[in-house]
Length: 517
Ligand code: PHE
Image (cartoon, rainbow, N blue to C red; front, top):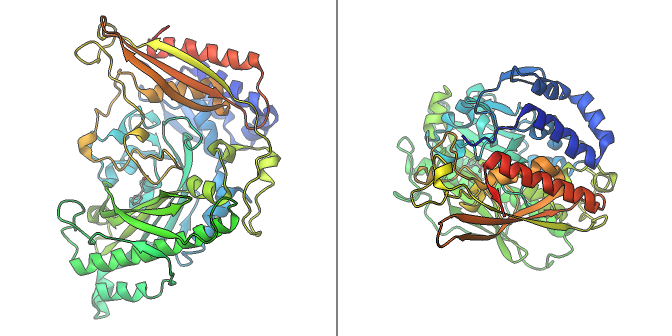
């Protein structure tokens, strides 16, 4: 069986290797402050116990989470004072003053929370080990803030809530994708019984609430009806009037938030045309846990940019959370994406920087000013070409000889939760697109990405497939990847780049069974 699970020693080595290459002095501070040393220590023991911030997890053959990812858990960037993600979070929160905020929910959740509670089918691609970090078969690093929806509805503490949190996905490597990023989720619900007790019609109460949302004067394209029998269905238990009212409340609330952000971004941006009026549009979407569903796009610097996913909460989620009388809407957005355009931050890795030249540029109580790159250090490209295993050496390869290639999920679908341009989500793929959920030994591009991260950490800027062909006689498939090594903080030496690339080549052979060319 192909293994994406890293050995204990490899994990430990990699963590020390890549982080210390960037900034050794912070390693010690972080390790001490966070208790992550325990993780590293736990990984050295054969017991396969993973201890994270005092909680113990029993790893099994589903474990595919490298220690460098576990090291990111305690960072909680969205809570760091004056961090651009914190400032962005607070800016959004300021538009929802009555919503209860939950900003420190623990990142390790059960598959029941992350998937089952939201109605993900068992064969949904989002459950795949190629896309999701597992500690064991029923424990994952949350892939989205929606993992906390059901629990938050069950608590029933407030009509509206906002959850901001770090989320984790195995994904491509480029300047807008990082395996850890931050989302904000929001929801607003209403109580039918309360309406009855007050002798009111719920749809009317919701419309009254719509009038309380601040007005804006931007152009909104919203050509579709609230629901559509095939494309975007009304749920069985909802009346058309209720759905219309909830959709209006959702759309006005989120438009208000987006107007605030993009006006702030416009003030900051040096490239935006100051007189270009802001335009937004609502697009029909699909999520397993909302119906009808929409994405909100904003016309930004010449392109339509996806900003968030949203919809009317699936009633079974509320019913199972013991609040069957409540109905409502939810949204989710990626904080990095918003912060990148708010501050013109060109590379998602910068959010993880501990370099003062980055961090000192952001101040909560000052007007937003574009980020000034402190220097562009040279990049170093290296190619690696290899033959994939053939059917005889791979248990699951396709008939006909060549091993099937699974591109990262981000190339299969679009979503709001990760920054542009190649934004992605494992979530909004309809079940029909699903692949077998458990470990598949077929080649998956995300495994190349994981190995690149393992050898280079944040020194890998970009990994992309540059060539691919099938040998006409043997049917063997050859791939060529170009790896772009660049530090955001210093110039890399030739020697260290070569060393990283050699390790990458070796690990591709060891882990994926490829043959180098
Ligand atoms: N969880 C979705 C994602 O990660 C976003 C979303 C949240 C969509 C809530 C609808 C409602 O892409």
